[in-house]
Image (cartoon, rainbow, N blue to C red; front, side, top):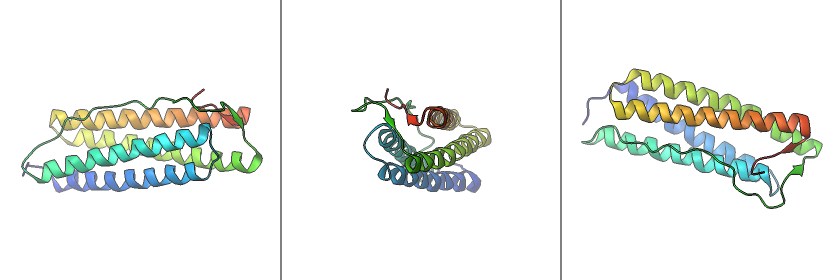
Length: 162
């Protein structure tokens, strides 16, 4: 077993729990919306957070086995084409999306901070790189959600995939 503090292993487990909650949050958000940009965005975020969970699980298995920190391949969240283009949101759907976006922004920023703190606690270059990349991905998600929040507030529509 690799020398790894209980604090780091606990943080990885906490990260796995939070990524699972995030994927469930975004899946629930996608289920509340009709087909279109909002559903596409939240479905992509669901898949992305599952990817983070899987990477953390692989890391946990590696660190508690006979290996060490893994190499993490970073990815960017990019819009996909959405059939039908922009959709004006009615009052109830708009409020639901505003609530989802606000919570999502807060959660993504918290996750980015947590990954940066974890990167600062470890010495292994692969581990530092992994958590710094994950922090950047969470920051990107927060920026995307902030852009969507702006569009929903000011235009009454999501523009993801446009």
